[in-house]
Length: 112
Image 1 (cartoon, one colour):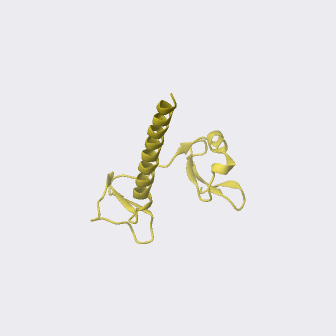
Image 2 (cartoon, rainbow, N blue to C red):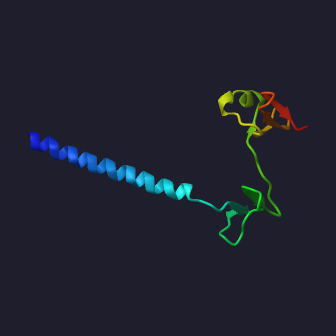
Image 3 (cartoon, rainbow, N blue to C red):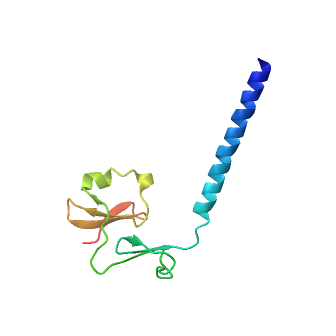
């Protein structure tokens, strides 16, 4: 019985090692990204198209727009304080206006 337990322990250890190795390798691909993405008319461009040098993300279209999250005032206010980030942008459907989170005043401000 001792041999059976020892063998299963080695198998479990081997499987755990393989699992963590897979996570490590997968994480390297995610963190290894050096190029940013430009989205043009709903397609993600390959290396032929790059965003403006100072931009993390650039959207380009001649017949489409950017659609941001649409929330009511109550839904906006229900976002936990720890999940709000300076400059977070939403479209407030209660007021038909864009709102952004200003961390220095801890307040939602209106762009209208």
